[in-house]
Length: 228
Image (cartoon, rainbow, N blue to C red; front, top):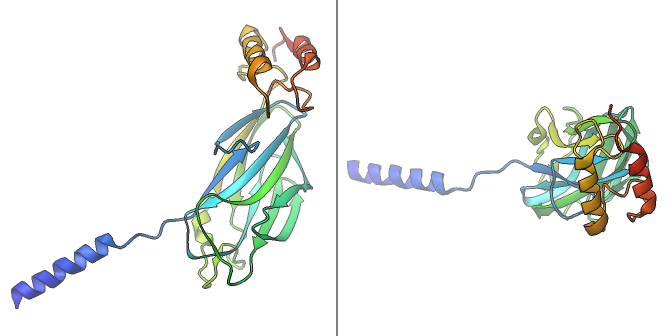
């Protein structure tokens, strides 16, 4: 009998250890839609910062809805609600913005849960306005509101914890590619490299018209040799 009990205990431990743990939701940013998750991005004043926000580790039976506050520094980045677009996998929910805190929600049909990784929730287009750095935070909207809900009613809002910083946008002075406060030969070298090789979402596209031309070179020339 003792041996049987030991065998049952051992089997129980093995089954417990082999049972897959429920992973928390994770959140990421893809800046300027290059297909790569980034934790930081650099822009010059006047440039757009297109930000896709993704959720991963979504378990069965699938996510029915999402929602969060997106908090940013509105003295560094500007955001208009027209620049917030819910991904086509979701029905648009609430979209609003007030003093650096955007409210963003979305939902699917109650039995059409979505599972897995790399699920885009929303695209947000910021405009860089002033030199500085702005963290982007996702915050829970409060205990009385259920946002990240599975189709079986399970609420996963606690996975946001006290907030998750998904990225940082650093706005540099025009021409200051390396962010050291001045526009010098190192920045000229980076400008020249992008002028020759960069084709999309390039920092050297200073006037943000979709191409790097002599107009951008002229703007860089005005800034060259300056320091903060």
